[in-house]
Image (cartoon, rainbow, N blue to C red; front, side):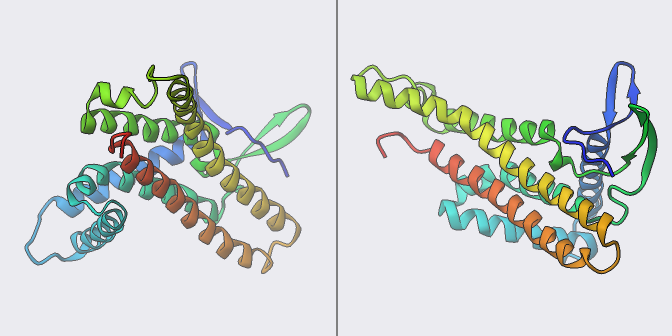
Length: 246
């Protein structure tokens, strides 16, 4: 049994290593594109099939976002970012309970011993992926904040020379934006990677019925982590689009 914090490279495309987490992330993205295409190819007034499922999911997510913002205009602006993050992170988290995770792969020799490199690994268990999602989320805060209240009013949150206290608070706000990337990425990575290690260890020691309770636990944790990530993004988006005086 081998547990690696870093994602394992399956092959190289030129000089770029293609890891198992990258393949999973690309597969999830492709799956979402195909579902969106099939669901919107022939829109009907009375939805059926894939369109019916998509409308159910979209309406549920929109109502959830609107319950936080209490502003339908803002909800429409925030929806693409928040909904995409939630769905992508949720699917990525659920990959860790797919049968064969960590047990199907290719054998490679490292340091004189054979190590199994799995084909499938949750992209949320790769710090590179979680940092990328966090950067997109925090960048969205800045863009929507500037678009909503204007560049100079938004910049006052970080650069304020009205007094030493205001200047110090602005510096703290600036630091907090960087801290959001760190907290977002490490929270998601830590929880999913820990769950992946737990499932691997339990499966190795007691491979039959013992892993079942842990599988259900990881399903719950995966949903909660996706909800927490998207909820925090939504709350920060709401705060970023309100002037500092309010």
